[in-house]
Length: 471
Image (cartoon, rainbow, N blue to C red; front, top):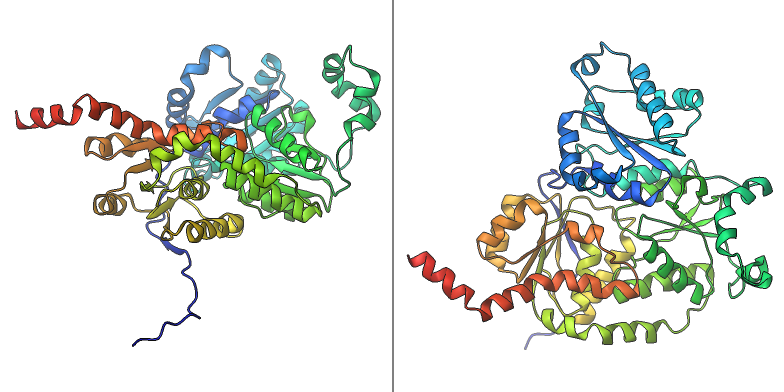
């Protein structure tokens, strides 16, 4: 008879790192959503024709809307240092000021500016003083950063531009002119400071960071308000002139797992305290996110268990489609850990999570929740592979035969042609996936290829393909 060692430690997550390559979109893609989020901004991407072609293809459908971004193409004279970088950038920025008059110009440095050592950080302050418009420099090159990390670099640069004190009465009066128009006709008591602060607990100011659509901003802000937590501001704000006040000792918490450098900037540059919480993706993640914020602020959360259970009840029609199935993440947008944790809670298994870059400190709470979720659901822990080698991953996909592979666009069609069901990971980047109310949208995306396959099987699609193969 063999004795069972009850003191053996529980299994823990396994981490691996393969090639060190980023098989993702270029991080200058962040312009696609940031220029729409920050309504008074202008983004100037500084790179070669290759960068321009990429932007044109990625966002060309928006060109007729006169988007607030442009491409500063480096010519041979720029690369060979025969032209004056300062004068060329000054000429472009003066044109932007004349035509668009933005509140801020964001320079996005690409791989080429890194290779030829363009001193963007040195040029920007002098040019900013000369033309009178703030210039924020963000290095978003594909040599060093993955797809969504472009936003991280932009927000990290903006952290240092956040004011350290509230606006003066004159500035506040001008800034709130639109809000006064919206409040026109309301009772005076409804728009007073007392009414605005009603229902909130007394706590250290809290700033949220991460670019999400306005409806998500409203949802998450209201969920925290239900717990008596007041959000002092968001980074980024809808307008650059409305950046949140950030002082030493403030709390900051992220809503996306790819914002580790922004979190570092809050801690090191502004001496803030970053709350290490899971991310508000899925009912379980949203509840854990709110609970962590409340615990740090000394507030007892109320009704979150019932709120989460209510959301799960409304998701059952989707959950039953994926319960017991397996999902494999190839790695693209750094949302993989949070999405995998949510899908495992839905009843799926996940043998491997590929991720381009892993900051174990910033995602520590999410990793702990992933491990806890696997134990509670009674499924094996996934293996986490940083910077995965695509060739090796495809071999593992053939061996594991997962029901669904979430991958970048480059590999989706080749895998589909080989009978592997896929979903583009980029869709989760642009979809509204945060908060209690958007969990259904996540499952809508995940189940779409499975529902499509079921519909095709009903039409005899598989038999037709086999017959064509025999012919």
